[in-house]
Length: 102
Image 1 (tube, rainbow, N blue to C red):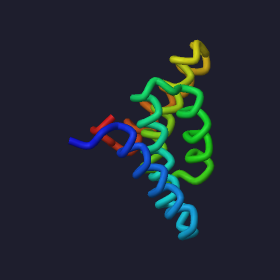
Image 2 (cartoon, one colour):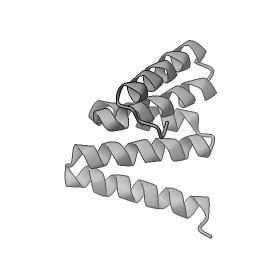
Image 3 (spheres, one colour):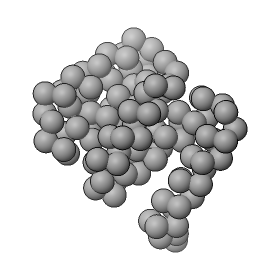
């Protein structure tokens, strides 16, 4: 089984490749995944930063996920009102596009 540090390295490498490709959709997805991994690693500040960048690029389909990640990062940073806003918006987007994964 791969260690978290090797997985983290692969996510960062994938994000760098996505950035070099110039494909904003791929970069948005890579940043969203990196943000989620940062949440899992209990690094909410890092999750917040990369997820904000992803939101600048995100498609409608990925918007619910990115907003959810941002809401969780804000929650773990103690920004409860902000977290509620992001999580509410995430739910709204997911309901609007009928995204059952969130």
